[in-house]
Length: 162
Image 1: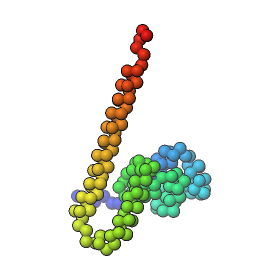
Image 2: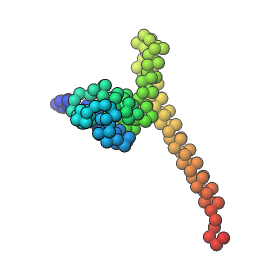
Image 3: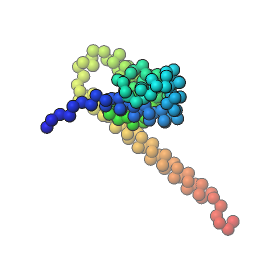
Image 4: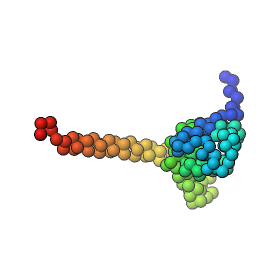
């Protein structure tokens, strides 16, 4: 089966989609984003359109003015999901992971060389499984709380004919 040639514009398109989604999430126009980044509107439009190679300086400036996560934008490119950057813009998931990796690297040093990939995979998989489980439990807890509260309010409501 013949290989599909790499798409040289893929990163630009992904970055463009992610940046637009975050800018809209933050309620900014392109003109406002450009002004906050201290750049010309045309330069910003080229950046947002992904016409050039991803520019780390622009990514960091954009994230600074939107309060979003620059590592999430880069991660979105790596996993091919512009929506990931928007989903994690506010909770800083990728920045948190990068801080954890930095701390881990500093603590472990060259001992990382000897770690078995299976152990690393199990640790990462376990961490994300726990996050999924905790989110599901919190969702269920919130649903139970709301249902109980609604029942209580309904029981206190005056009955017709009183």
